[in-house]
Image 1 (cartoon, one colour):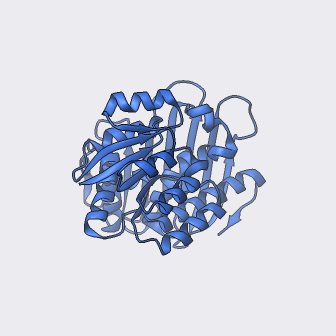
Image 2 (image 1 turned 90 degrees about the vertical axis):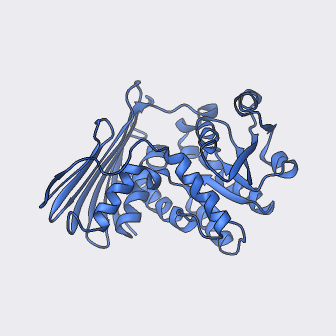
Image 3 (image 1 turned 45 degrees about the vertical axis):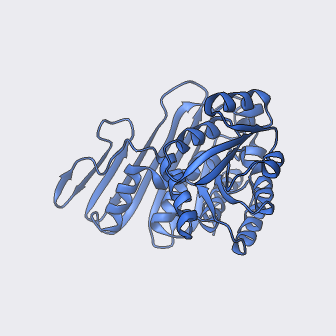
Length: 324
């Protein structure tokens, strides 16, 4: 039985702790958070041993796998501490806040004897899995254009309002759009150039909206949009893949969200939509440890998504195309 300790009991930490209850082969045994109220909630919610810091948990708790759910700017430092403690590591996306931090983690991971997985959860979301399978099987022919949207809900609230601090979070592109960036990279390969626009720095309201156009080396064009609004609303995602022989669309607001129109006619829902993707990604991590294989999303994969996301941020800042 793999013993898991979660570091950070904010929104995503709570989601991971709940998802771990659905994962076979592991047991949540510890949680760490600098906030005493968060520690009390974790102890009440899951009856686990709690610690006031990552260092204390790594030094005292008997854990095999460390699940890192802290704010983005802390990812590298906590991962380094977990590596020094010789633990298996699962870390929420993005890999890091900067390219320099990401490169250090890539270099260190190459010689690391434990497993490291990164939480790009969209790769484990059933409708996206179904869409990827359809594209890879050639159901729509050669893909030309991809369109995605992610957002619609209120501006996120985190510990000490860290999402609103661009230097800590990287804003809506690094925290939210990166989900779709990673999915597109997994499906279409390397990006050649990026052009992006963002409201960051143009309003004092808690409102951030970004759009990016990616050109992949294989010719695919992707239009990505992500939004943090200042008003409460419904979070939703959409995805459209247009190919020479058909079209696949996804809209999470629909009762049958995923459909395909090809030369063979219209198809209904592709794959189940009720499976918890957070449980699936953590199950993959546990099985990677048990079977001595790489997790589905590697440090190198996550660095690729980080690189493109930071290129989009740079393009939005400068108003110029960024070549990769």
